[in-house]
Length: 228
Image (cartoon, rainbow, N blue to C red; front, side, top):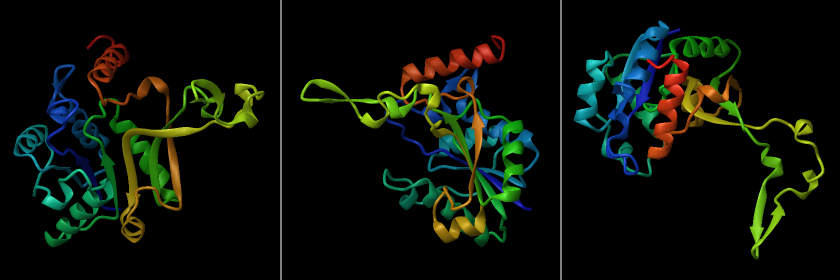
């Protein structure tokens, strides 16, 4: 099957300035996503979707292609990831290129690897989509809410249930999605009716939304890579 890796990297991050190209353990953080996609050996094209010429230059330095910049419609705060992906697919069709499946890889995912991407691809043999997930470290069923200044169980039916007896619940890792193109275009969604999980461990996952998150992610990365 023909395939494309799409790394979505809009400019203008507000909480962490220039987040997608900020240096992370010695190189721009987007470089890790590009290198993982290239090293996986499974993609016919590795591209970066961006509205920033600065990001475009750095992406190309690390081996990605940037054949076009995003339109205004997919560069605003209201555009979804699905909107961005569909625009990329349609623009490639105009260039005479089509693909059977794509991977949407986030630009701030230094823990993604070529091995993970290749492994996730295998799951597409029996699914329309794959999403990287991790188990919640604490069972959400035991959550509290605060009402009128008092603590209450959000789900009182579980207040006497042992944690080990609760069903595991997972959340998006913020690393990658994979989808077959046809069902994606039909549903315009990255979570399709037949979506398989690619399960990761806690130490391979870190949301990076604040500078505190950034520092934690760098510390984790250095531990995993023995201080490199």
